[in-house]
Image (cartoon, rainbow, N blue to C red; front, side, top):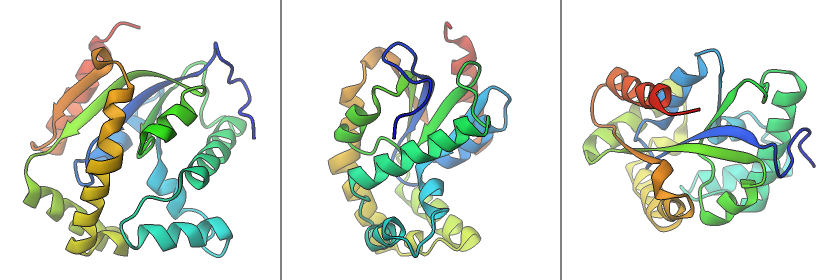
Length: 204
């Protein structure tokens, strides 16, 4: 399905939030999304909102429950449908809003697939070297949001391995000049302040 208003010369102005599971992408993304002029789109939330009785829903459960990535074709198809809906309802107004993507692209092929739709201005790479902190974050979120895929430490560690093998190489797809490393170990408010400050300091 084609995305209206998206052409080779008119792509969505985009900021990517990047980092391992538990680095805090969702927290930063939701905070940015609460600011007028930003639209936060978390791929994980999009999947969790789908009808689990549909073929796509069943495919999501099959893979995510094992800590594996959902196949690219399903991920990109759902992403396109979702962004179409946001544009169609004027929730996302591309002429004035910056799209904040969280959880996509998850591999280089996905990065290539969405390149004709998004104009990536910045990639905020949230770096968290505290393994225990990341596990605690994911398990607390699992309890709070009833996300069973995050509750098992075994699944969490499998997701990290998948991230290292498939997702981390995405950084090489984008120019080094737009990648911003952010220390994600500190308090969430400090991380959010750091990211927002860099966005405001960046040239239009």
